[in-house]
Length: 155
Image (tube, rainbow, N blue to C red):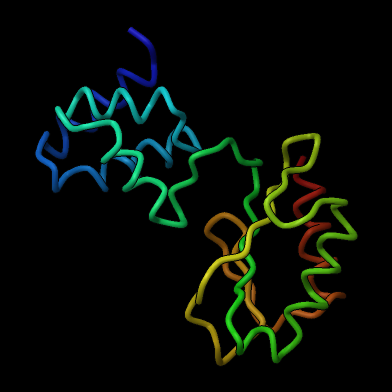
């Protein structure tokens, strides 16, 4: 059996096979595989006896359920007005310049993906970003450079 199919079966065994268990199963696949492939969405639909269009619709609705292959480190920059007013655009330009990618792209080595997202809940410490599950606040172009350099050293 395919490892993704096994994972989905195990998640369905754990959470149940009802429609209301779709989201935890999608999250479980993303946690293990880092994204939802077309294959995994079809397998989830089959396992839960749901239309594939419903699984795909749910997966693409939520911004943290990636449905395309992402880098090892997913950088999510908050795009709210508060972050924009406090220098988000300069921070974003610094990231793009350092990694040589634009929003929505992944570095050729597969280490970094850059995304914008809605409010991260840190308006009082804007601008803010996530790198995978790690929160960074009070960002400046210089601080972002230090943060990304620490990830580059982890390679």
